[in-house]
Length: 293
Length: 179
Image (cartoon, rainbow over all chains, first blue to last red; front, side, top):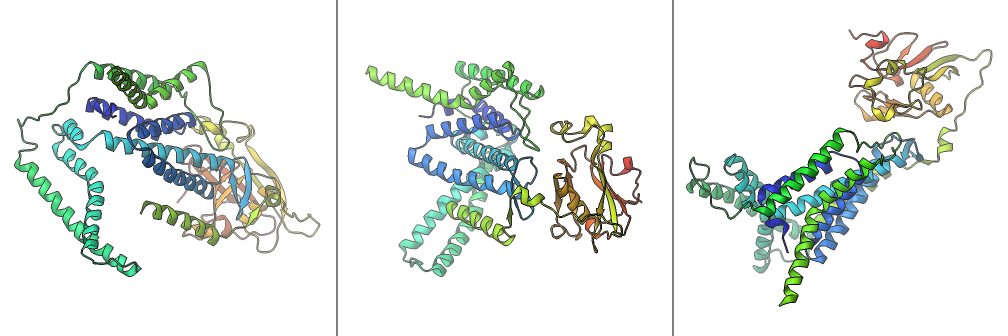
């Protein structure tokens, strides 16, 4: 099911860094589209269809919100649709809003699958030796929100089973919310101190301390590493030679589609869809093996 | 929880649109302006809009604006034109009338949007502040002098000559220096 996450943590980290950086620092619509498609496809390989559908509907609404908010604040652009309070609402601003929305949601979906693939043990494995304090703080901070949510749910349920604040009135719900939040906040502070203490007592970050981990850098990792590096060099060259140049204001520029340009876009598409391909390949492999039994 | 936040964001957006007013005009309605005819005894002012400094700093200009459509070859966006001065007119009123009459794009920050109570001209003819380097933007002068306050604060007299100039170096290339 999670074949991509079985790769070496270095590769996973490198891949996510590359993909998120490319998505964040360009406004080229083709790259953003590839990134969105890749992130959603990979995310949908790792979750149940219901969870995916719920997420997609929610983020679609966020997307619409961004797309309509941009033309209200941005008035640049040649093609004016109408004037709202003496300010032009332009096609360019709407399309720019759509592009920002695409970028944001692509990065959100990448981050969602990142938190599922790069678990904190992998992160600590990567950076525990070089920057022990920071990596511990980071892994604890990243873990904080899901743990906090879980604990709130638990405490809330306990309160309900005790028969407290179980009526439907709003004041009751607010009071219970405050009480639960209060207790969970103190719990999380205590938990953080406990965690730090227990790591310290195990000698975390001391000189000469060895780490045990099951991650091995094998042939499969090497091939994928070479592929990622090759593609990223090609993509960076594309950025350097302004192949992905694209403007929204004052008029939307035409996409430059030279032969090299198309090749570059194909490489970007492959890069973005790489984890999805790996998952699909593994699934087919698994089904084949099972059919032989 | 997540859904509530989203609904809240939509409601805030809707309220802010409603509060700020919903005056919708079509493009032609917006540009339809009444220009008084110049008669013998009417008071007039002249206005011109130029962007010559960009031609000297062409390499600093944002690449998407490097077209004759946005930066005319001679640097003249609006040639010297005479407009009738109505009583109480400020520089901003004349500029607004002139650009609407000539269908030139203009974006400004309203007087209620900043703490100086003054209108700020962000861009004319798609040439915005910072379009040509970090020190670029629009400046105005009346009778050759650069006032140090906003366009909506300058009350005009008969015969005033208004010039809007694009600067690429905080007005130094227009012969103005801050004290």
